[in-house]
Image 1 (cartoon, rainbow, N blue to C red):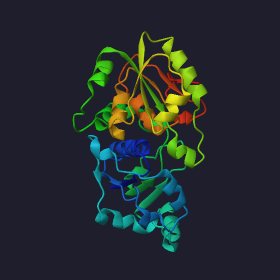
Image 2: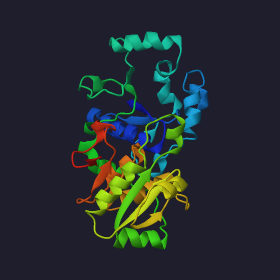
Image 3: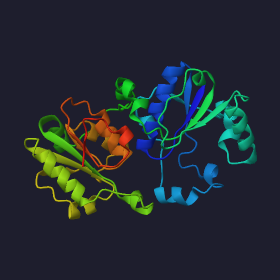
Image 4: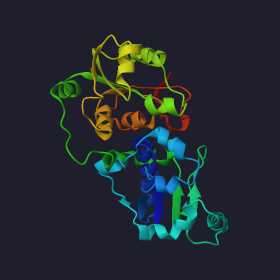
Length: 293
């Protein structure tokens, strides 16, 4: 049995799920999801992440809206790793024993720059995995499985204007992320990036229409010039998982430095799609045929 921790926003949850799905296939063991760390202050209040999480805002378990095949771990399953995942003195001792193969219940924390996969021997042991797993090679060979697992359970109602655009026009999704990135001083792509991307993709696509998504749609209207037809999708009543699905069904994508729009572009099944992404952003997850500017 394996457990993978699920945390943060929908895009990061999808990376963690993709890794869990790969682990379940490689190990041929039941793999479960630990969702207790999503917006659960009781579990993090003793650490130094409280202020950081308050800045990030409310996080929800978003995978429940998709056809995911892995189940959520219950408390009985998690009890084997309880000492490993809490910040207390016992963690250091048991972690040390597990790393020396003297404790059957293993714990693996993936560092951000880690770029490897576990060996067949390591996969034999019941393990609790924590990390973000930002590497294309973790999941690219199971893309067809993820296409299914990240499809919506329930049919989504589309506004007539959106339905017409998605079925009859050359749609290009454009995602701008600002809100929480401004709060945590994260680098964000400015108007120059988007206007260059719009110009570049507009020269390659005939009569495009842009579907625009953002957590700050008024800033987009004021600062990004888009001379083509456009629909501002955010703010008209769709949930985040629905917006991701709409992006995914656009013919082409302009993404932010955000795992949210990354997954929409990655799961886009259009064989002739053009994807534009920010340069110098998580190079290990970017497919070779994407355009980085």
